[in-house]
Image (cartoon, rainbow, N blue to C red; front, top):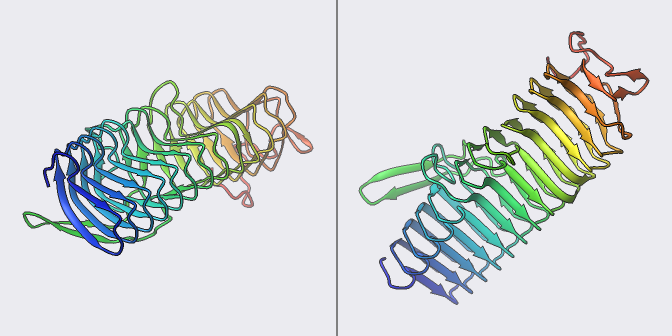
Length: 360
């Protein structure tokens, strides 16, 4: 489809099947508007004047894309749309704005189950790999998000989303594209790497889950593995592996959030809390960071238990003196930190204790 407006425009349609290749359209490659319960296959959505795929005020559609490249706005754009399933296979890359962008869209599933394709190719950039704006109850993952110019995933005023690679454990998608090439997407990849900006940024958004992500070498002065900003409550950050340029986990004005079973190493600071209260930090491995393992700045009422915080260059725990609590941690060098009943940590880094649950 090579059209002066939209390559394929679907209006007020229900229970239909559409498939096409859309190149160089003035507006969207494929547009769904007020259309529900359709199946749409976009084999190649490239160089369109607005979005590769636009879904407007549409519900319960099943969308499968193959290549979404070099569109003038977003690769995939959802606006006021609910309960859609979008599988990206294998690539969304080089779009002038974002790879995937949701606005006022809830209860959608955005997945990229594949072996080698990515949201934001290592050689071509989107701005953000995935951007959610005022959108909630979405499931995002699995994915590879690589080399985007502003960051991997960003949430703005978007509560109660799930960001992770295990959510849809095994979606198998098989395409046969023109020319006979087979593409099998098997859900095996799950990385957020080499972005300019934070791997995951959660801004003014509560009750989100970020879990089972591998976040590595995201760069820039404001780049952190997972960054939470501005009065964030009840976020659950679980079982992520982070190796970044600045902080692994950077929580600003975060309240009542939970960091559990994460691995933060080989960056400046493993876990950094600023102006944050009543957060729980448990069963994390925070090692070999060049400044601090866990740092508390103007933060109080936080609790850290059973963490391995060792071999960090300056301090394992560093607190500015506000009241925080902890117990059963393993560390050596501390500033203003005491586990219950003991100056410093309960265990030293060299101490071998078969009951300590995290291996040194």
